[in-house]
Image 1: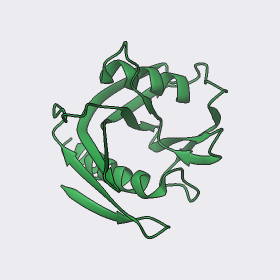
Image 2: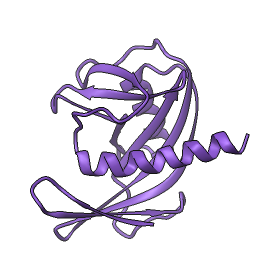
Image 3: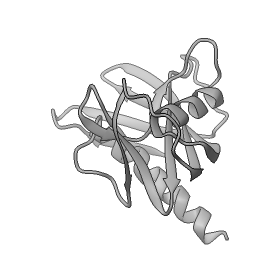
Length: 157
């Protein structure tokens, strides 16, 4: 599935979704986690960007994407007990620059762990996408994909 998105500065961005095991030639850089807790989505307010976003981060050189996703979920949300799965690899193309990451879906049963307050101002439980977003174009596209995945999970029960 390919989605084109017009950014606020009128430039275009292309987001493409692939199978979870897809590995682009230029590698993976990010992990983004759509996490649910008590029938709400978990968002964090990034300290530097002063806006909300899905829990996310860079994949360190010493870890794989799955380890990075678990680390970021715990550090940014305080998740203690959860299930997590990779649901897609996504690629973002913008002005000749390509980046890729893995998109995860998590269900958090227990929160309350330590949150990295160097990166996170607030952990927000919300039923929908917050208004003030970091990277609004990409976040909206990824969130729509997560909502569809979540709806399929509910309907398959």
